[in-house]
Length: 143
Length: 174
Image (tube, rainbow over all chains, first blue to last red; front, side, top):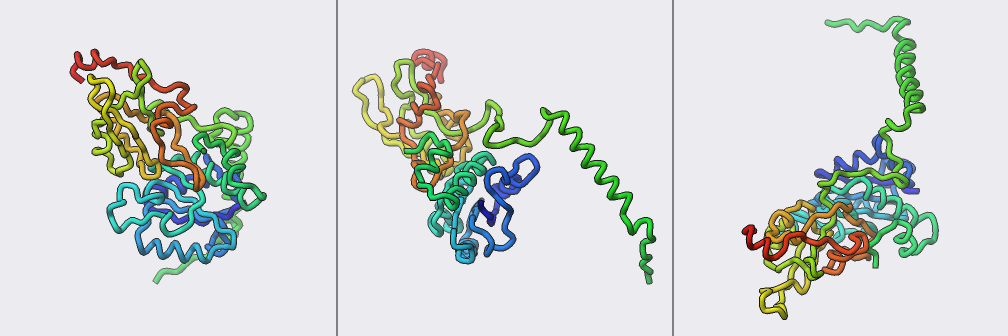
């Protein structure tokens, strides 16, 4: 059970908005409903590029969240500032926050984001180890 | 000065519009019950959406017919990459006819933007964008793929062989 709070920019915004559409339902992978304030959320989904002002904003949102703080980074810009890594106006999410799940792609398919949400929603529910969750999510390249 | 007219009783009940709207929803509901194949909804974990054959997924390094790696370490893909995610180390080959070969070829999938420029730049058909999806994973799993993963991961079932032979390639001028 997760209550996601979404921070979205750029073209990943279009993919993240389609997650709660009629074709793709994120209720079927463990999302109860979208949080209306950061105080109600326990999952932070970061999609798209992050500039330094927004990085400060993200830290504030992360502090205001519930005690159980889960973070998913979506898209190459949020993961490692892919093509803008030499530009100081773009920051990687893993440098400012502890990220639990990475979804690569530019932009990623909605299948992968749902896979991430369904994998990470089991962290809070049961006392599962990381290896159990990885085995359930069906990743092939896990060492 | 405009005077706002209050709605009369007929339109203030909104009965006709409610009936119209509910008729639409029930019509669609009953239609979907008897036409399950035409439903646009995807039951995600059980059934998966199929993308076209030109889908640009995770990378594949092709091999020659004798099983050795196709790449000649010319560095064109690493130069053309907009995100600098490919790192190649070239080495001398034992065979004097072969100029050089990559002793390590690593792709950082966290930085890759899946643009396909490496596939376009490659002159010897060594890098391809495969039909698989990008691989998401928890923090701690490996995202930097080496040669072993790119050529012979279990999903590829033995690896992709590049059809072009060495002589055919030189004759056709590629």
